[in-house]
Length: 146
Image (cartoon, rainbow, N blue to C red):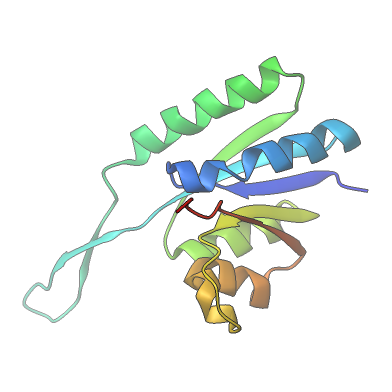
């Protein structure tokens, strides 16, 4: 059923909560996990002609090392895994990668805030729910214990 599963990671524990779910699905179906991290460009000012200067994000090498580490962990468990580092708007980069890879499923986490409106999920998750070219599995973060 699933051939490619895209997992957006930003280096946070919250984002990594999606990995056990995605790993289980990949193990069960033989799907490949494609890990993606998006570097957001920095805007550093405007030269005399009024154009905005965009500087490549400085953490690209760190992002690659982070994804390589996860790729190694997943492969050690017998899961096919690859990774991609993209630059730009996070939601757009995830959507573009999903289209380019003909992704079957995006697995991502969210804060899981309560409420009845989709905006409570967070802007990137909301964007994926609205515009992803495939199904999206949203993993809710555990609620803090009182």
